[in-house]
Length: 393
Image (cartoon, rainbow, N blue to C red; front, side, top):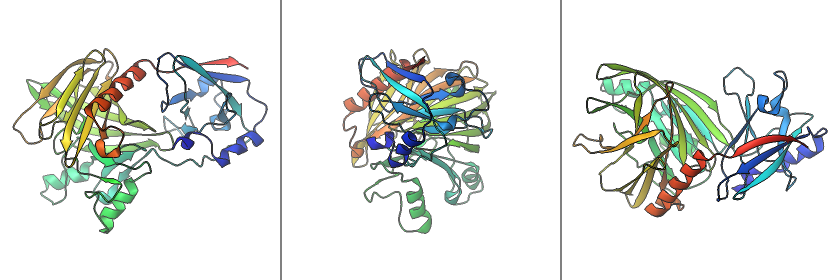
């Protein structure tokens, strides 16, 4: 899939239609002693010194070393109809820097790269919201599914947990699996070569759902009430989920999630806007409580590696240094309520963490040690992000 990150035939047109170079050179620096890839760099108009009426989509990113354009994705972050940021994923060797030229084009050129990072609302399966990239897929549940449970209608789901869809192919599967389900042509609960959904959530937190602990009790929201897709593309999908206010021992909690999943990552980024508490608990379901827990408080990550049907599965939470303020291996006899919780501090109504999984059958993480190594390296990278700067050519 590496070719996804370099411009395909359509993008060679960039060279032909490029105007005089913009005289801006972007320097991406890696301060870690590990190679960096599949990390997304965001470039804004302000960073490039563009005026408000200039079109960011008329710019491309070209490697000075290879003279090739990189795949880019443009995102309207605030929904006002105008692009705010340009995304790309560089490759940078350990303890080094890589330079790219920011090139202005005569006209916008359409990107023909695969939309590997995808999400959408799924009304044909009650009202799920599902998202995926080339590594992993997830879903969670909406208000119709909740009302069906409340009205004793078969087929509903009452959960604000995050469900994991275990894929072992790099191409998109969400639409294909839902179509198979809704047409009766098959079931996504059976593996026919691409993977399956055999991950049980129930009232658990699944992979990264949140709770608020108050008076020794974990309180949780119900299903999301509203959604908004921000972007899909070759590099990133992101969206927001809004929840009805919920009670935590007399404290009213308001919650909105912004979830982002980038190409090449096994972990979704969760940006939680929450009021009514100064701490949240992000959780990983313990299922049968027969797995192995690893907690690295110094580097702010938690891992759960468990037997899973005829395979094994690792789940994990990683957060920024100084955000993790504790954890609890919470085991109870209440069905689906046992979770490994990471306690995260809320600052200015915000909390940020990453959560995801690695399935042994997908072939990348076949042991607990391999999964934990990934979480450790992920922590090092998010706490030491690539630095970017501009200079004149």
